[in-house]
Image (cartoon, rainbow, N blue to C red; front, top):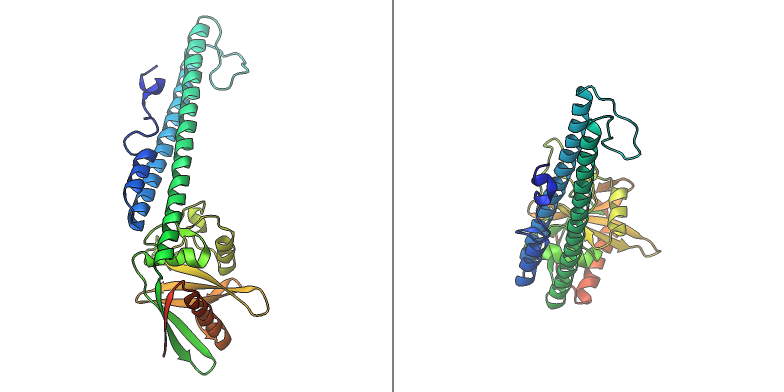
Length: 305
């Protein structure tokens, strides 16, 4: 059995990089952007750790299959065994297989223990990172008010298109917390108009926080359910969601979609969004922002077109 098989291939939790390095960086720096950089660093480290453990398991499985194949090639018939994996062979191969099986079993157990320890370390680090970032965002919101400029563009007498002036820096992160009670999974999420397929519009979600790559383009109804059901983090991309109460009860789901120099306000209608708002919808959206201004949560300018 090689030395790497005996347990030295995978470094311990807290080695160069890993949870402790990311947490140390987060604790040393106070800006939101640096905190998100530490979070991204930890995600990359965790993905690499998962890949290393997976490769090590595959290597051990291949080694077990190879040994069993070698016994069969030698013309020895294996006998049944209650232990999965390698089985002891008859005659002179019995001692060899039993020894190999025992060593492989111990190596697998040691690997599983190290993997469980590693995953526990990463889980603790992710919890601390999310909690620290959320506390930091709330502290920023208590000290400063995001500034929004609402732009009205008339479409006839009863319909309109609403735009919000482009926001940058920490403001998108603060608005996400203010509008949804959750933090985004990435710092520059709102201005990200990248797409993995040039034939498709940018997805409204990242494949983060349990969202699979094939589910980054939910319809309007599914997106609203995901936002309302999220716990601490939203993997938003290129948009900001906002629920606005209706006078008779219930609420409408709006989103501010990144459109270059502005954010365009869209309202969910069934499984789709539309950007041309009725007069009452536009007024309710503007009124919701005005309530936030009067409550001292944001600064707001309204510019009619």
